[in-house]
Length: 433
RNA sequence: GUGCUCGUAGCUCAGUUGGUUAGAGCGUCGGUUUGUGGAACCGAAGGUCGUGGGUUCAAGACCCAUCGGGCACCCCA
Image (cartoon, rainbow, N blue to C red; front, side):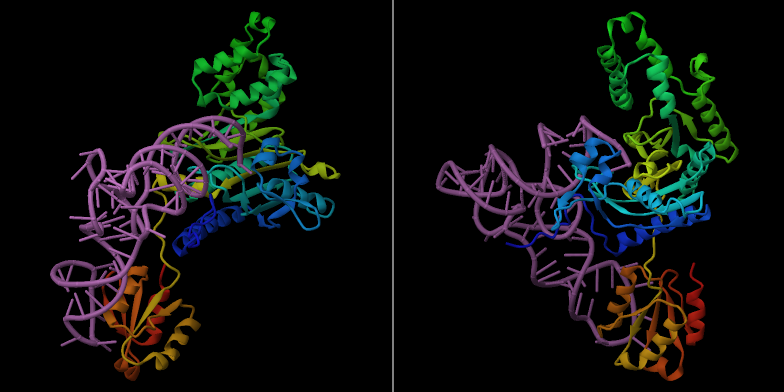
């Protein structure tokens, strides 16, 4: 029985060309967030299972987390998300850290579920968090940064929108303004989350099922729809305008506008699944009708650090997954053609392998990435190998070249060929972008 | 976890109502002077038809199971 060549279900092999793309994605993210002063951290891929039981959301822990019992009878989870881990790390050094804390990481995460487009079992996710800022300045910074990441990848503002909502406002709306009880609010939250996936009539039907007779009589469903259909804060019922969360949202929109984030919109139907969000939440949506989905999001979770028995720390963060990002960039034609790391391919002519080593070392010492064809094949085969690999330069080294100290350098893109001293070769190839 | 759908060479696919030794294009490898290009020409390798059962004189095709991909649920980091 032959062994399977497939990678584990829902996980990917990264061949060099795939890894090259991943490096490009990660480096771009790193450049942007570090420009905002964020520092990289990391942590183990394994965590005690209890870490996720507290606040992540039951379904995620029970059904979508890889778990096992280790040899010491400990319940262990492969991390399904990074937020509990980073909260643990902050809590552990709560007193000695200097705030505001700006941290990021690009961990691989695992979730046990049936794979489909944009959702695999293993993915990498940029996690960015700011700890220690209670005001909307934190949301402003984090959302601006998310926007900056998108534009740095070449996305235009008409390719995506940033939807904003406030958990506090939703809770107030459902429980105080519309007078739903706790259980109704829970069910409604889930239902509202699916609002745009089901038809309007199905939605109102399912809302109606949740109402009591008195609520039906009071037309609670109409009041609910009036709120949910608001496309801006100004469209909310007037009696809500003085609410603190509305004030905060207003302030946030002003800040975003002032820093050029013009594609942020208010969406009262935005919920997000995690239980730990406490206030403002946001999601970045692809506007492409073919792929009208949430790509990534985040929000404020002020309570998580405090669960570790220390004073709580106000926190805002988001996670950006590599799979959804790649889908987005691919469908908007924003993925660049990437060259291999190798700058130059040496074609050896005749039995020159040994004597060519000095030249190779000279180029490598000068910082060039140099590979050679050491097969002894005919020159046309050697040259074709470089072409197929996408390497930009080929250098011919034969008897004549070694004698004269002049080498034939060929730019495989322009097909131009010149004879150069090795110093000149180094100079020319180093000019690569 | 549920439902639908697909799986033939490295890739993209043909393969008639079940009927001989399963095909093409591209790619790969070799050759057409071992000092130079993706072309052209010649040639070769490469498939237990995802896997395992079953029906049949006969299965790539029909049935069941299973693995993998895609889509929709569930859920969403």
